[in-house]
Length: 546
Image (cartoon, rainbow, N blue to C red; front, top):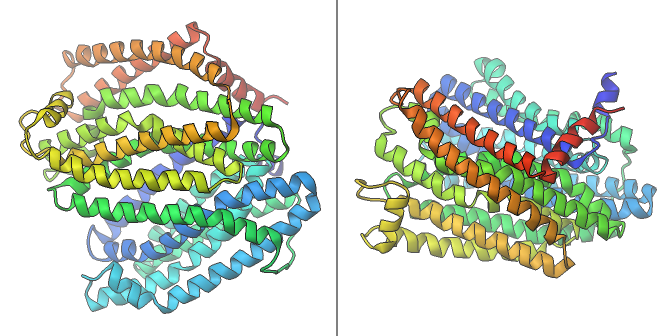
């Protein structure tokens, strides 16, 4: 019974996305619990800082080589091989597995040797004792990218065969491993217990996928050859993505440097960005991961009609779900910030709340673009094209940096530009609003990136069922008008009956206003017979039909 559940195939892309969304939600909650336990055990300073500093270099290896390269490169190649010759596909998998394991171990060993020098760069202000602990913890955690590298190949196999249930458990097990380290191992090993938890989590992330991969047909063989054709092809796909991820890291450093010149801007930007990233991760990233194997498979098999149909369907489903959420975030931005961050104490004052709410409101304008970008990336990757999205990403990063400097400067002074945002985002009475220049720059750059990706994707493949997308969009916009009006009305209506100076009052007001808006949206789209409602409903029912 358990074996059947774990090896069951996800019958539709939509249900796979629902599984991944639930996984993202649960793992996100577990991550917050882990952060709370870590702070409770070691405080905000001291050894907690040592852990976060030690985490940076192994995490950079993971982001550059695995997230940036291997994950998006392996699946399209595997799809191409599997369509032609199944045995060759499994042979190729073993070559890739062994060669990349060799490279990951080699890179980890080199970084292991140079860890002291790297820590001097990452944490120059640490005391000698703190640096020594950070060096030891960093070296310990170099095991995690090795396990994640192995895991990423097995993840691609499971995605190709639609085994999304097991795949969705991986991030949950990773976070449980960290929590286990904090609760069970830190009493004996101190902060090193958290590092051991990270390694255990990464190990579980890999091990849970092995039985399902074997069930799909994988059998391990020690095959090793640097000149194997697929190795060269994967590297050619990886390097543009590694370059893009590296550019994003540089972008973060520059934006942080700009923010450091504006009082409170770093915290305001990060808090607002984390809040807007939540729906993007749950909806945009979940659908992107779920559709990736289907797009890779249909394109590799020459099924262009099926490719276009799948692309159009997922594009419309993301629009259907993310537009109402982004509108609700804009309308309820002040309530959301007060509920999530207003409990941090006196240090997070009313001015910080208003600026963070304004930043969240600005981010909400680009949430639609942010949610569709991971999907468009995967669409390009399924064509084995990593260069186009990488170049567009780099251009948008350059634009973001230029705009961040420009907007931060313009918003320092009273002019038509600053007055527009003061009135739009209700910032009257706040002297310095330059902090909102950073989210504004990122939002504009994100929309620019989305538009360019869409234009170049159309040039690459031709028509992708735009008529269906625009037909759905018209119904979504009409329903959204009702959502905006009724949410605003409900927000002010309940304010007369609730004490909005208390957490409970704000919570009830937010829930009721949000529910009224969502119910009206889904009622109107149901009345207009939006196909997305039928798709989501049939996907859930189909999964549980024998």
